Length: 132
View 1 (cartoon, rainbow, N blue to C red):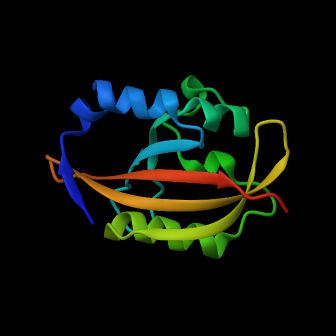
View 2 (cartoon, one colour):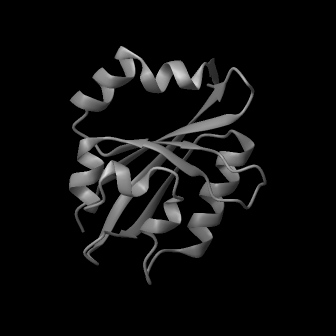
């Protein structure tokens, strides 16, 4: 389901702060890229995201998720995720990412589309560590 929201109000609002500050799962919010094969831009991350990846919020804001790609990250899966974000479609994929310290981590990535009131597509991305 796609919900229309005011992104600025969401990011700065108390509900969003509560969700991010109390989430036990690594969560990030991204703004979808303008074209189907463009990467999304990271807008905000939760503390568990920083704990899992080693990247602070300041290090990832304004960057693309490509920052997490390592030598073993599946290009095909990455393309499917980018296209789903652009098409405003929900998607769930298993993906191996690379933490800041070089660790390779398996995650389940779930994209849920959210539409900003300006009609700019924005996506919540929930990543759960999957032990291998």
